Each structure stands twice: as structure tokens, then as C-alpha cells.
Length: 461
Ligand code: NAI
Image 1 (tube, helix red, strand yellow):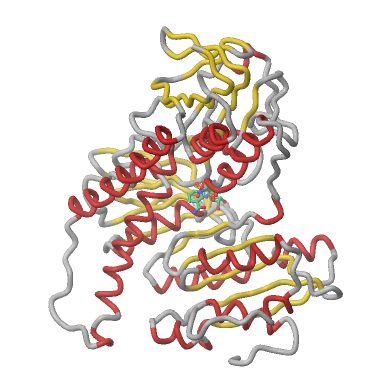
Image 2 (spheres, helix red, strand yellow):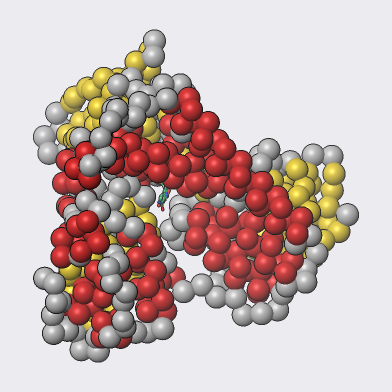
């Protein structure tokens, strides 16, 4: 069997790359060892966690806001098994969708785990395949933390958290990053007592500091408690209970906390085991990622890599964009990803979204900037929908007014951020956004008001 391109891994990076390459006329196969396509994102990540977020947000609305709107009656009860069934159904719809797209675009799915036997040679089980080019899109796995014994039952990663046998009464989350807060807030809404233990003195490192502070306050109101500046030393399970040991960085004092379940969420690392990269001499970075050039080519001719397995933020959409770009490069076009405009979204309620520079990064650069900020409290639609908490913040160059970054915490922040992404892609000034008519009443008006606040001032502030 021979191909123009074999993509290894059918997550958002790999399957998008395979489809785009086929659309551009290449003969393509994609190797995937899981029983279903879609990788971590569709099977045990983005998609299932969003199903649980949606279900628990509806529960929150029913418990907290229905009565105020005149919707009275019995409050819904949680049937956890049924909720997991709904989540599984959502996964199935999505993974089958990719199978359909593969057929439609004539991408062959080679089932099994691939090893690269040499440039142009892919081995899957007993079968060998010849190919002109190889793209590695094998993604990432949860990083282990020394002393923390993951059994995916009592001490779990995000994978186990999506399959718990029952809702824990007490959940300890290690790490106040994206996974910890997304999953922690889901279980808090389901009634768990959630404690987040975080090494740093702030949550969501890398995000805008002001957003992080507001976010921590909101999560606190939702019942999550935080132990900050705490380095977790170990987590052990015995008879369905877990003990987490940590030391406080300020005084080195040692502490313990008990839980029914512990979620380890202290980061992910590239998953490249079994590919045979060492034998091929593929160069890796110091952090264990596959090193590539600007066109995703590794140190070995004919082998390319994208997504979580290489440098950059571990985000499905970053992998997708790289998948399309490398497919275009392999088809003789000029594939390109603008790394300055990659949005990041934390899917809690409310959502947190960001793109481009933070105030902290601009200060570090010594760049002169201005801030336009608008609270959702001044947005009529948000007020009507019990969603007035949060704000939009746009950072623009002080001299030129060009948008440098934006940070939103509030309703549908993950959708709202994209008009700012488009504006940034076009090199827009805040005034360009401010002069764009926005329909009333929409949440988007808050974005426009923040843009107005970069100039002569917002109207509803
Ligand atoms: P993360 O890197 O976002 O956060 C890990 C947190 O754990 C950090 O705050 C860190 O300071 C803390 N930590 C590390 N060691 C610790 C220790 N010993 N004790 C206490 N705290 C400790 O990692 P996370 O949440 O596991 O996510 C992994 C990757 O997956 C990230 O790159 C993330 O961007 C990505 N992801 C993105 C999602 C999204 O875009 N919505 C959803 C889920 C994952």
C-alpha cells in the first residue's frame, strides 16, 4: 500500500490535516489506534467536558434563577448515570461525524498504532505502508506528578474524572489551571465540596492577572475553595479514600487533606511513545517536544509534526490550524499559522477568553498601551439573563490604537472573543471595532463598548 501522506493520530490536528490534504489532491491515510476517531479532544477532553458543563449549567440555572423568572416547581434531581449516557452519546455523534468526513474525502483510516520504520515507511501491526510524507499528530497525555499515584478511580486525570462511578462528596483538585477549574466547577455544581490546591499564588497562570482575580472570586462564590502557594508532595488512595499531602511555600509547613476523589491537573506532555523517534534520530526540544522548523518539518526529511506533540500552546484549535497549514505546505502551497492571534478559552460558567498580549506581557516589553474596559453589568442582555458578572478588556497601542490583546470574563466569552481575533488578524484599531454597528441587545455590545472605552469612552459605563 502506498500513499502521498500518512498522518499518525486522528485528533483535531491529525484528522484536519488528513482531510485538508485529501481536499488538495493527495492520497491520504490516517493511522489511529483508538476505537474511534477524534483523539483526546473528542473522546476524553473538550467535547465530553462541554456536555457535562452544559448539563450542570442548566442545573445551576434551575436551582438559582428559575424561581426569579417565575419558573416554579420541583427542582431537577441529578441522575449521574443518565448524564454520563448523554455525554457518551455526544461523543459518539462527533466521532462518527469524523468517520463520515474521512469517507467523504477518501481518507483511509488505518486502525492500529503506528511505528515509523524509516523515512517513508510506516508499520501498523504486521502491515507495512509506503508514503512520500509522514505527519506526526500524536497529541499529549497527562503529565505524572511524583508521589501522586493515579488509578483513574480515586486519583484521576481528566480522563477518569469524566467517567467517575459516582459524584464525589469531597473532591481535591491539584492545579488551578484550565482542566482543574473546568472539571472542578462541574463537580461543584453537582454538589461536591471542591478544594483546589495550587502551587502558585494565582490561578490560571499566563492569563491576564485582573481576569484571574475576578475569576477566582466568582469560583469562590460558586463554592470552590482554594489553597494557594501549596506544593503537592503526594496523593495516595486506600479503600476508596485519598489523602493529599502538600507543603505551603511561605513557611514550608506540611499539611494533609482527605478526599473521596483527587483530580490531577498539573499539565500535559507530548505523547510520542512507540513511534520509534529515537531510532530515527528525530531531534526533540529540552521539554520533550518534537522539534520542527517553521514549516513543521522535523530534523528527518519527509517527517513532519504538529499539535500538542510540538512547541506552543496545547490547544485543539492550534493543532487544527497547524494541520491545515502543513497539508497546504505538502501540497505545494504556503501554509501559515498566525501564532499572535490564537484565542484561549476556559469553559466554565461564565467563560474566560483571551487573545494576544496581556497587560503583564506589555509591561514586560515596556510597550505603551491603553486599556478599554466594560462591565457586563452595563449590558442589557446580560442583566436580563443573570449574566452581569464579568467584563471585556481590550488592550490597544497607545499611539496607533492597534488592538494588541483582549480578555473577557463573562457570558459566552469564548464566542465573543472571535470578533476581536478577526479584527486583530486584519490589524484593526480599537476605533474600527468601536465604529462597527453591533446589534442590540446582544452580549457583543460589551465588546464594542470596551473598544469605545479605548477612545472617547463607553456609553453605558
Ligand atoms: P495547566 O498548565 O493549565 O495548569 C496546571 C496548574 O497546576 C498550574 O497552575 C500549576 O501552577 C499547577 N501545579 C503544577 N504543579 C503543582 C503542584 N505540585 N502542586 C500544586 N499545583 C501545581 O494544566 P492543565 O489544566 O492540566 O491543562 C493541560 C493542558 O491542556 C494545558 O496546556 C491546557 O491549555 C490544555 N487544555 C486546554 C483546555 C481549553 O483550552 N479549554 C481544556 C483542557 C486542557
